[in-house]
Length: 230
Length: 379
Image (tube, rainbow over all chains, first blue to last red; front, side):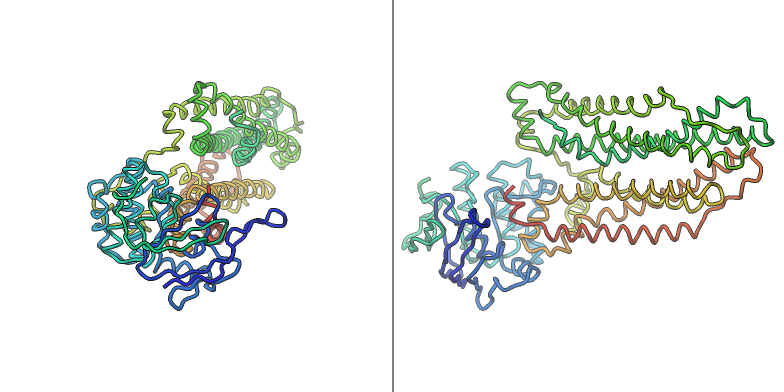
């Protein structure tokens, strides 16, 4: 379980200081699929960065089980991310000078995962494993980033607008892969998006507004990537 | 304006190399011209042999140092032009999309020639100030009549104006060539990577090892510059220590200073470029949980063998250059001390090189550690 308690975060100094997170408290259960919804500037990406250990909050705590990550040193925080966290970003951030296989291997070697080729197959890219990112479409690149994140066998997968740069068909395809792999591997998902339709795929929906949680709801019925609107 | 004065200022490495090259060439060539004019007045015993040796030395030093540094400057200029186009692909792509021709954009790259002009002018001025002392050193044994320093406009034109114009033209021509990239590729800042490893290697090589290899192979000119910095260090430091019996102390110190400036500047600029070119890779590795030591090793470690090869080449180069000087150029001059490979100088410079290089590596490793993951991802 991830326990988030009273986290605050500001940027800038003096008159230019902006409080992005204003005392957020919530819990995320193991294996849950959480979607964080919010308009641009609502603080959802900062929230994701803080709870994943990429950024430190100004105050408050983030605890995974019994481990409070906000108290860890940089080196221990890096090790924590290595052992527990996977990331998928809107811009993919693939290593352009590495093939698909090597990009996935980047994640796999952190977990001593010798079976990373299975994940490449699972995202439907087995015939493109020797290609470079520049030779792939946007959807294929995002699938590589999914495979890379999952190859390290994360306990929690954080996704920041994973379909933001994709067209509808490719976006649905990528979400479908993520859902299938979520069912198969049982990791926790925390996804940030501004697309309200994607929220229908999640167990828990968190709505953010001006750095605060405005609503938390639970979906009784979850839809698939091909059932939601776009 | 596409390329501004600010961009030209970033080419300080080229300015320094140009400055050193022109400094050395001015000393020897100006002296050669002045002493040649007095050839008929040299009557002292052994004077003619010494005259021939000094004129030959001047030609060899000017050709070897000037040539070597000119080639390095050309490679560095091409690296900067390519790097500028790679990092400003979007802006340049938009200009091309709007209808600007390749030449119309490329002609602004002439400002890169200014860095060469500044370096050459400073080198020439510095050499001219030092020339009286240099003339005295060259004639320490008073084998020649007193030679006064003369200003030779043609030499100034050749060493200051011609390089500046040539480099400005080269920058424009090379930029024009690089800008032939299709508009969409420029806008997407798309770069082609080709698989060069064998099937066995790509399958079995661990990620970090593969990353080290691809980092080194990614920008080949940086491999050259890092090897060149080690070459300069090894060559100039050893030469200045080995030639204590063959030349004056001032000359030895001057050679060492030039070597150290070239080595440090080139290494500093190269390592800065390596880290800059790999910031996104480093940030992503840190996000995924790779420790900073793994990132540093993968990004910087691949250049270590290259630098030691550069050091070895520099050692051999300085030995053969001094050997040629003693055996061929000074063959007819009497009382030239015997020259043998100086193992002590080699060992001292190797130890100094290892300490300096590893210190640089440590500084850049700390720079990698301080990279902000968020700022890199927000770019």
